[in-house]
Length: 282
Image (cartoon, rainbow, N blue to C red; front, side, top):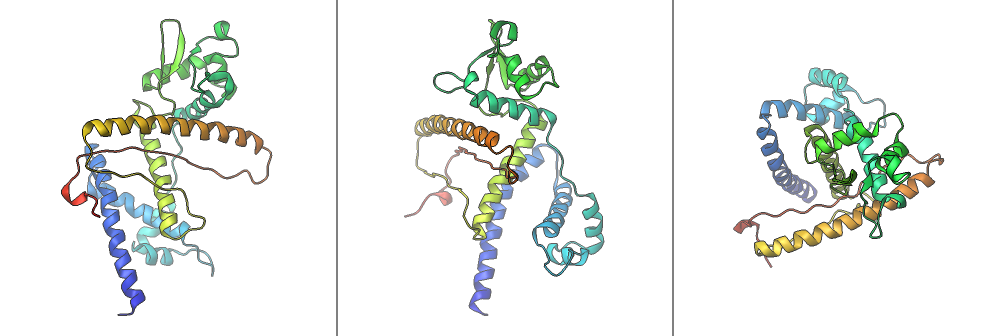
């Protein structure tokens, strides 16, 4: 067997082992919500067809059902049906508007304190003027009542109101404590972009995307808790700084003809008991 073919087969085997590991937490999540393998299999079939149709352009002409079938391994009759059914779902309205409001709360100098953290805001403009929750919402959209936004945020655990009728942002990033639709949207968006960055790098894309982590084992629970808090503090600071810079650049690029790019910057922390086979070997 040619050396190139052997290397390709070895790479495919390693990739399948990695994919198996990636799918494990997803399988647990889906089964917890009553989604079994036949449902997932039907979903995956549509994703393979969509990826083949859009990510593998044919320079010689239009992407035919036959070529999509060849690339994806899905029968041509199924390809034709799935290509007409596949469509990207829009994010929940509360995510689209809420994300913009939180981003402004965390970045606009009027709405942050001396440490550049989102400050509590008087709920009513009659009490806080321009530095109020009402004016914050109005600065993003005048088509929705601030009270409706606040009620939904309180329900989701995004914000809370104190005894002085001031609104506090419960998290400096928009991660609802409740609300399955909103949490599922961010689950898909964040993991998609993380995997897309890693895939780009595995395919030797240039320039490579930032995609790094710090990994240690042999730690006590107390040490993990210390690292969790340190990671949280550094992550919040980094996210807020990138958010402030992105908002400034977005305003600057508003009238540019090439202002059509999007970006994502994210961080995560995870811990679990170390199994012997997972220990780092020197």
